[in-house]
Length: 169
Image (cartoon, rainbow, N blue to C red; front, top):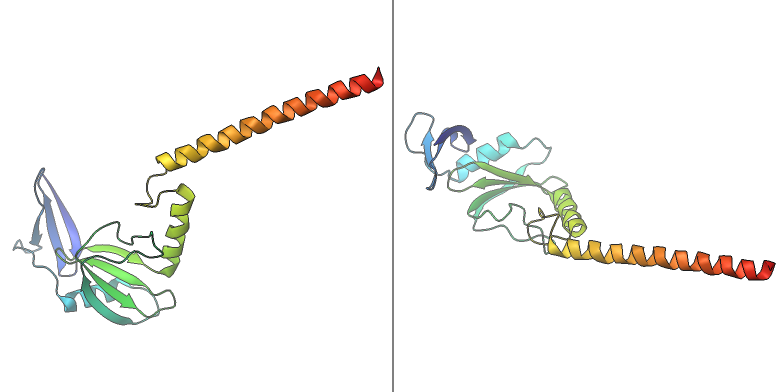
């Protein structure tokens, strides 16, 4: 059992974690915590946002769409509120629809970074597994190419020495 104080769209709350079952959420006064509505999310998102843009939309979504084909902005979390701002990077703030807890702040620069990170680690699912089978296979292939190159270099040097020895003798 653990208890944590959490900031939510409805104000401070207590998150009580029970091993093996769902968490219990209580308002700071000890009453059952209510899910946030659009107005609460709007105020909460504006308090979190530090940019120069203005809030243009708040809507509840079942799941954020994948960006650039492979980027999942909330790591698979669903049933969220999203607050969109009209700044140059199209900032989005995600809030859990059940608890009102802040989930993530994302923008187009983050999406581009995450896209290239997933390409780099060759993990097109979560982007967290930098030791996946595809990457291991690429490492084995690259190692085989390097060893082949070293072998070919050694054979070439040996052939060159032999050729020079024949010309000198």
